[in-house]
Image (tube, one colour):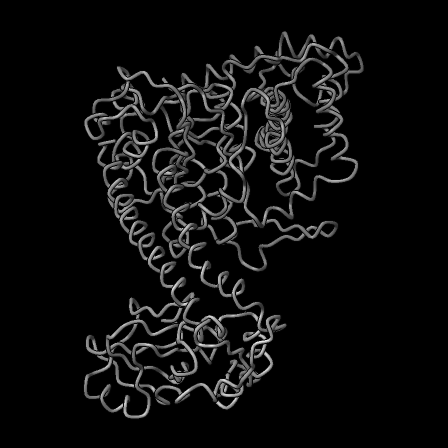
Length: 618
């Protein structure tokens, strides 16, 4: 239905990054050399390389399991020949332990190609036939079509020797190796394969787990387009970390990498994690094989990985998958192939009935909402689309508004020069000499009310503007008392004086009554000497900020005292020159207001667009 987006959602936990350092030195060089040998041997698709390494690694792990079963048999049945579990008596020569001892590379290639892989396929079919009892084993998902793609005997022997050198019984080295190989998908770029970046997977898992760790151990987790199973593996690793005691953390002496054992997880919880928790779906067979192997190498022995296009009709109608199509999951993590093509006739009517669209991004979102249980959670990556384009336009308008807000400051420097150098040699005076009054607001915390008169503090003065949007309120009686000492009026200038944002000016351009806190200074300019708009721009200049920096007091919270503010030295051009600047400034502010209004209207339209998108009306 969709074209295969080979997103390899393979990721690991941040705290696993240290463990990846175990793949270093000689072993890392061997892996890189093996990768090059695959390439020169004609196998250039990185997914195929990983798949072939997966098969061989599986062969060794299967032999290790067979050895464990053989020891169990010997203890229970001393003296009796071992009948074999994964390798019957007539197939024991196919075991890894036999192959690695064979010196004839041509003979090894013949045995692996003509006997080992056919045995895998038969074993997969047998597992599939017996899957009705208990949880399904991963074998039937990725082994029933197993095919050896290696045709060079020397390449096969190099692969066998490399895998044999791995300490697969120590910690999670097999997972470390696998993730190192999968990491090459980020740079391969062949045939469109790519990984969801690990830090993105980490973030999504952390977001859904935050505050829910204890209950998450019993969740059912799904991915409707699982790729190579990275989201599912990452979620399991995050659980393992959370449920590991300090004594359960194993630190590698050589690399310092940490392995989390999950020693606080009970046997019953482990049974759920390994058999019932994880369910993935994809319609790319290669992805399914790698996903199943990836999960097995992370100790998820029997995940439910299905060959299935989850948007199609048969996902809901098939007996095997019907129960997962609706109200099935506590959590869904996904990065689906949003940009694929769509066979509209094959999309289930329950999806198109919700959204009248052919856009896979909307259909997948509806699908995931349907798959979630009541109260379930979903973290999903969405594509660049109409909402992103609209949001980009909205952001450009905001940027334009921000640039416009700096125009007045640019005009100031063009007209008067930098106050630090005073290139036009204006008269320089102290701020106190051109002000009727310089004071600050209330020196105690007032009693706030739900409504009334705005009470302005530092947080209400941003980018040269006074805003009441987030201001607190005091009663009219309190306000009447406060303004006896400090009464802000239109044409005054406010200046922040306490905290990290000290030295930020704002013009009082409103007749709305308000009071101010001690963190804000009030400057009442003498308009016979200085224009308020001009004063505000002087105070916003870099030179006045430098003066504020030198005058700041307090070892902890910065505090700009009134006595220091009164000493600020500012240039004082003639009023006529100031008036010319103010006239231009007002015209610029009018354009800023128009742009600001336009941006607000566009934001409203964008929000409406979002609502229409989720209703399927686009």
